[in-house]
Length: 180
Image (cartoon, rainbow, N blue to C red; front, side, top):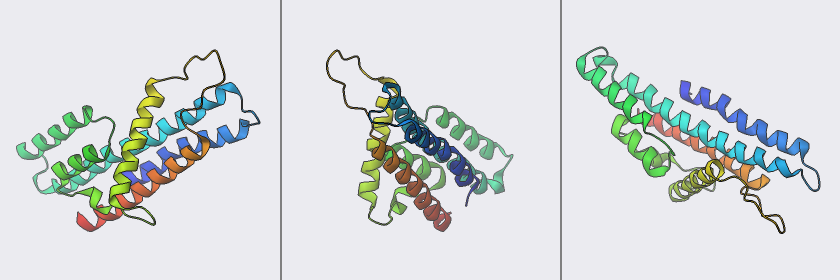
């Protein structure tokens, strides 16, 4: 496993811990403020994915550039990646594919197949989770004077998102191991 993959394993634990904390305080009905743990869990899970993508591309590029390390060309390419990563947000399927292809010449989405998930559904699910993360980050629970509004993310959805991201990293690692 790559260093980025090992680091991801630590990063995703934050999301898993938040889910466990939610479960620990969950009662019928759960406290009003428990929903924040699920939103934070989704944000942390997708942040672990984003960090993995950035670290994995960087790690792969360092290996590819080993023969030109320290040269003008090597430094130029490394600086290009550093600048691109500063603007790299919300790593949906297209952005992730483009980043890996531009710097490593590998279409990582070709390896996004496992169990009952194929490449098309993996891309769709990643894009949906990234979109939901944006909602979790930028939209707090709306004020409502009537009956309570549904939570942005349900407990089972967070568990599914965490499992999905872990499988996505495994599939990406396997594909890169074969193609780098």
